[in-house]
Length: 73
Image 1 (cartoon, rainbow, N blue to C red):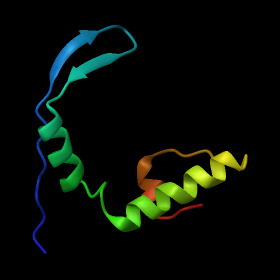
Image 2: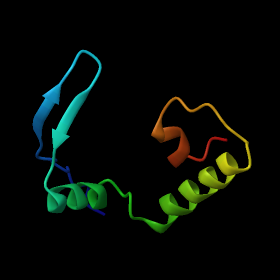
Image 3: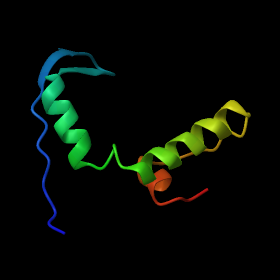
């Protein structure tokens, strides 16, 4: 399987000391999410599991999205 590098084109629409607001075309964002695997069934199952835990009050500290993807609980 070939690895693709996803490029997300975005313009800074507003910047403060704490936040950066970006303006991204819908098509570019969807393409980026697809390249990053955010529409894969496995990722979506893990995301749903995490949301279910959250709704049940089983809040877990996460250092990164990578932890969620790799299944560290």
